[in-house]
Image (cartoon, rainbow, N blue to C red):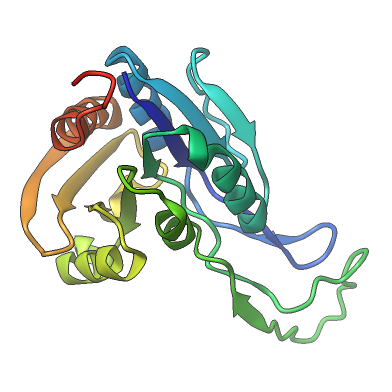
Amino acid sequence: MARLLITAGPTRAYLDDVRFLTNASSGRMAASLAVAAIGAGHEVTIVSGPVACRYPAAARVVGVTTTDEMLAAGLEVLPRVDGVIAAAAPCDFQPAERVKGKIPRSGTRLTLHLEPTVDVVATLARRARRGQWVVAFALEVGADRDRAVAKAVAKRCDLIVCNGLPALESSRTRVDVYEPSGTHLGGRAGSKRAVARWLVALFDERFPSPRRR
């Protein structure tokens, strides 16, 4: 049995108290991973942005809204887990300034000045202690292998799971798993539930739990 942290869903970056930037992450892949991990005997904590999907009752769920909140919650859980599966899709950019109240509609163009948000996966990987592992997900146009591998290196992840745009808002997906060296560990297509079971089995083989040795 391993203790796992799964990050899930989107985050929001508020322009004002009404409007926000976000993305189309549904949380379904993370929910499927949680179901598969619990079915394999693992203990799961999910740190999730706002989603409509349901997570398994056996998982501990920590709800967050912003990217900063996701990182803070992940860092709070990190010391108590054996591994991290970063399946969330946090906002990569946020307004340089959040306006209080509501920006009035004027009928003219509105220029937004955006700045990068904190990198949740990279920060968790840097803070991981020896023996902890971190797997990231990378959604790339055309499931671009080179960009996914570059992210694995830059973020200091042990593995990266690459998928493409068709996975958004879908019950099906196609993934390929790579080491930071670029070695391809395999790919799988199908329902997110089936792909999640395959991924959890791969992670179990790759990162044996100290409680199973």
